Length: 332
Image 1 (tube, one colour):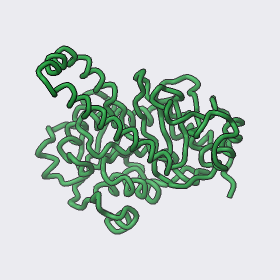
Image 2 (cartoon, one colour; image 1 turned 30 degrees about the horizontal axis):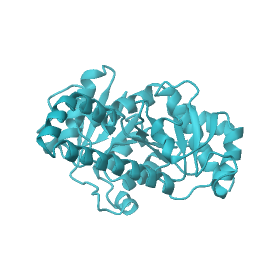
Image 3 (cartoon, rainbow, N blue to C red; image 1 turned 60 degrees about the horizontal axis):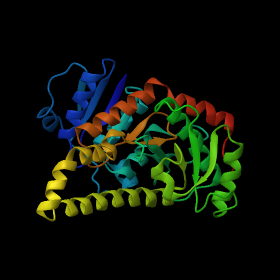
Image 4 (cartoon, rainbow, N blue to C red; image 1 turned 120 degrees about the horizontal axis):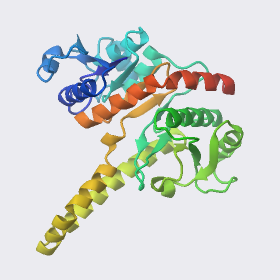
């Protein structure tokens, strides 16, 4: 199995990408990794390993670049070349912690969509109170969606959770403003009808306030709403930890209490740590394309590689293709 990785994408590239890749090949004996990027910078961190190869390029897509234009003009950028490895059949999947929009464009234009999928979805796994996590899609690949798109998101999310996360009969929820069937706008009302008839374990509408309580294993919504929810969760978590830190360092008494609570606080932080959940899958493409968090450290890159490896090993894309073919193409 071979995975191509954009070694220059992300806030801590290439150091953390290289360290994460080295840990992955030491952990998985069947894994080969291709690092794409500036070889001089990569070799500063890379210890010689017969299952890690490097493809040199000094061209990089920046976070400030306009995504589609960058992919079309910077054909030798590390991200584009990593995607090209997949399109040419030289790698089974690719990963990048770089520009999200550019990776989506590279996925669409270079790797290509599964036949019948009109709009791919970006799907991260987010933490829950119980530690199980839930898959949320779409979180920004497409701002708008049709009911048929949400149906496809639900099918792909169900397959992913079943194959990769090992959840038998995953619970699928439709994000809405209430749990009643008649709630919501035209999109959610029509989507509810389709999901109710789909070959999935649809549990109905779920509200945003219940997501972190594990209301569903997979939650589907349009990309605009999903992105707002994602950033609200991230922002709330960061602010909560800041307030907690301030409260526990405000006086001598609170500092003593913090010392006692430190092991529990570390466990809490670990439970909410995105780096343990891997990256966000771009579902609906012909091969696994994973978007790692922009601030990924080595552990986060390792988790993204582990996640990608499982998608390849368990033939998730093939199962998605088969199921989507049976479900039929979306209406125009």
